[in-house]
Image 1: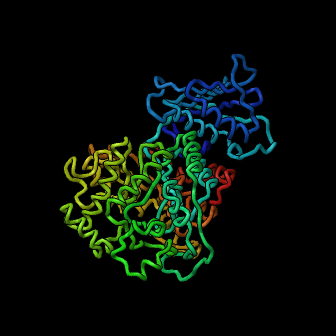
Image 2: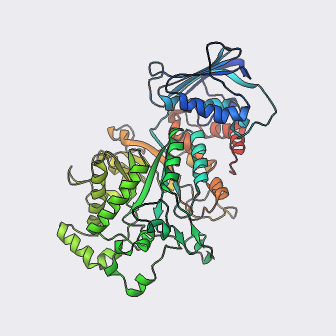
Image 3: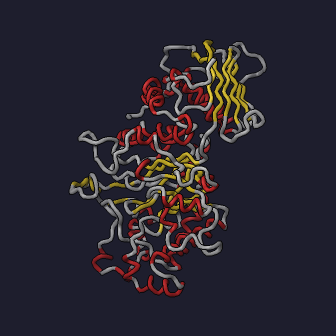
Length: 531
């Protein structure tokens, strides 16, 4: 017997404890599924995916079985931690216990990996009617609560089927948050029924810059795309069945050129020349647009109405409101904005942005939700005393390095670590001419694997508990299709998944590389991932 995750099992992410011996269990046409209360969704998933790929029907257990029994149960007494599981394979069958239904589901993902790469296909290849599993006992639990991936669907639109595929790939890696970046200067993607021009006008741009910000190449085709609210409800339900939470992002007050193109009165009209106002369109380039929302009561009511519809579609605890890279030049030139600064007794335009964000922070909190924002939401005295600064539930996505996350955690705010220097997957994977568009930092598979979400400034302190997780982000300025998505994301997302799931004390890149090479690349190929 051994207590180490053997490389031969090739499990990714690595589980906490593995004990194996030399025996094997064969699953065949006689295998039945005994799904206890609370595991019904996992049973449906097993039949629809693993059952379809293996050709095993996995009928319900009715008290008598001619073959092995696959037993699923939620058992907090045996598995006390949320999302944790215990998987035991013996000559009698398989027992999969979870601390909750999510734990059972993550254990089912491990079971699928043990069945081999062909268990990840969408149809049975017809080569075998029996599938073997090693006799083993695996006890496992996640390191972090928030194990996220951000998909930007504004710069290049991802159709609904692509989002559903992304959710399947996240589930296969035990990631549990999909952050959907739905609005930006280059496109507004969510249907808002009260304001139809947000997608009628804001979801289409006349052309698109090809390559990085300085490129002079253009794709002259119109680029567009949007999700109906029912599309997004379908995405949310599909994710929930896989124990993934979808966090929407509506970007305010900056990154708003598509918004003010659709509804110009939301912009700083008194800071624009007639020529600028007449030439306003959804942005065709990259970088940071100068267009920022006007700090008026009309703008506040407009976005309250928008968010009412967002909350109706997305039932999760968190709503991301951006708050980053808000260029203040229009506010400096706007008499309306300057009057608002004076009326509110603010020091400057940074204080005005903080006021804007705090308004919606409190608005969300009053409805039982929590604001998430990029680390710029800390600026402008946002960490003031309770009642003046951000609400206690406001959460920071630390993207400009670790500093914002450290500051927020020390002030008692939860933090999601996603520093661009480490986990922006749109950045290049290597030096040299092979990179399709060599932007950003070079971040290899090894680099991502060595990312540490809890910085040394917080390690061992009480503030470390506020680092609730981490997130890998994919901005899509140069990610124009599924093939490019696959190239940018994989296999680096597998390395990230191990960082946020597995025990950091046993992290070993050489061992990870062996497991990926021996087994996980074949799984990705079976899943149709063009890594």
